[in-house]
Amino acid sequence: MALNVLDFEKPIAELDANIAQLKQVSEQEGVDRSAEIAALEEHRDRLIAEIFANLTPWDKTLLARHPNRPYTLDYVRAIFDDFVELHGDRLFADDKAIIGGFGFLDGKPVMVIGQQKGRDLKERQFRNFGCAKPEGYRKALRLMKMAEKFGRPIISFVDTPAADCNFGSEERGISEAIARNMREMSVLKVPVIVAVTGEGGSGGALGIAVGDRILMQEHAIYSVIPPEGCAAILSEFQRDPQRAPEAAEAMKITAQHCLEYGVLDEIVPEPLGGAHRNYEVAAANVKAAIVRNLAAVEKLSPKKLVEQRYQKFRRMGVFAVVTESLEAAKAG
Amino acid sequence: MSPGGWFKRRSKAANKAVRKQLDALPDGLWTKCSKCSEILFSKELERNLRVCNRCGYHFKLGAAERLAITVDEDSFVEMDTDLVSVNPLDFPAYESKIEKWKTASGLNDGMVTGVAAIGGQPVVIGVADFGFLGGSMGSVYGEKVTRAFERGMDERLPVLIVNTSGGARMQEGIISLMQMAKTSAAAAQFDRAGLMYIAIFGDPTMAGVHASFAMLADVIIAEPGALIGLAGQRVAAQAQVLKEPPGYRLAEWQLEHGMVDMVLPRREIRDTLIKLLDCGARRQ
Image 1 (cartoon, rainbow over the protein chains, first blue to last red):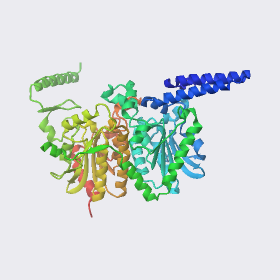
Image 2 (cartoon, one colour):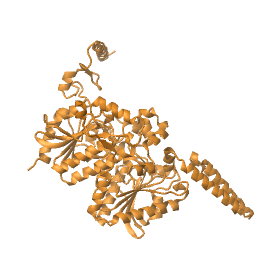
Image 3 (cartoon, rainbow over the protein chains, first blue to last red):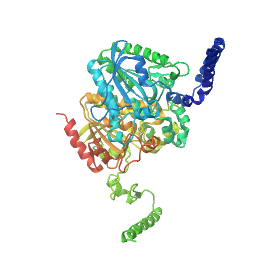
């Protein structure tokens, strides 16, 4: 347990331990110390609020990667009934880093897809650390096409450090798989709701993240490249991956920034201290946001839906239009 | 020591002597091949479309050079010259970098788009320039590619995009990333309109550009030796990718794995384009 505590969480963990000890003691001795416990809990919650009000983008990166953070299957279990997992891309293999299948959202049949990370070392290797291979994207596309065929909405959970870029993935066309998914998702005739629940890792995330509504949890991140990668490449950071916290700051990867840049539709609040402190509340909030946003786009005709989705991504980009062209500037 | 060794040694020594002599000559008259270190006469290199006549290395081409060898003479009319990058994230040193590359390249951005003719066939063409921040895709780049597809749809013209890019532009963060989705969505519209899209992969065609609109072309022509893939060397090293075999992710390797249609020497590309456009885009 203590291994899974981030540096800035340590004071919170200490108080948690004190509270637990107090509870245990009062139970064993049969003494009522509830007032003391309540006071301590209040103190802890105030401390959490204080710490979480001042999180840096790098702190958020660590939170988004928190080893105790709920992963896609945790959300699937909490949000959908009777989930039936489907496997394989029918071309090469079944990628364990992307899960998918049918489920019921308050009785309504939907297709669920999402990246899945592992909890312990063995499971992490099994899930390839949430890094999907071409097979994963192709499985996701197969399932999304199936959803389209049956007129079912698609709910996509994004939580990946990046796409897998090892030899085998390059060999089998990881770039093609991601590009094709973005192209096909942009013209799907059924609603697509995307929830970024942890790491939105560049193209690896986008391969299942083109949708009508993009939701993002309060402490999730969405980034063009992992901060370590950015720091390793740019001379601004002396090409030193150790300077990742600065790169995280510079790249503006938090949900709050993404909302500002029009990349998101909604930030989903997390329980006090982050999603990992209360799975139930975290999932309930995500579910409420999915249900609300799905209801908003469900009424649209397929044609209107596709048109709006295109315009949504068409608008993304920030640039200036200068009145005089470069030619004129040169002539002047 | 074998005679071969002696020859090799002598040739190296000779090269050194030549190089010393070259230092005394005016700049720009000679160019050293980045691959085989052969000293090439610049004018001859130009005549050879900037391909080393000793080892066949394809030098990177700027947008203007690429246009000159690709489209019919005087047929290119540039569009969207008024789009310029801003610094939406307040990223450190970004503005100064843009200014520097603008001055150095004479371009507004790493993507130049317009309408031209190839063998008499009108096309919408986009050409990347590696000299502008590594040909990286930011908002302007993404917008220009998107507009190229839209122009193609409006006028029922084929689209040709010549890529030389390191990927998404990190300095525009998440907004750059979204250009992948935006350009892919535009490619989807273009695809549904039943029009032809051809891509040329120059060295390099990587990451955010490769994994979006570039890979969505109907026909992909790669230049010999071009580096093509998702993760660049430094990113791959960061992600601790297993040791790379020789030739990994080069154009020929991608051809072997079915990811490009052909690898063509620069000199043969234009004629092939004319044939392809005739097959896929000629108005009946």
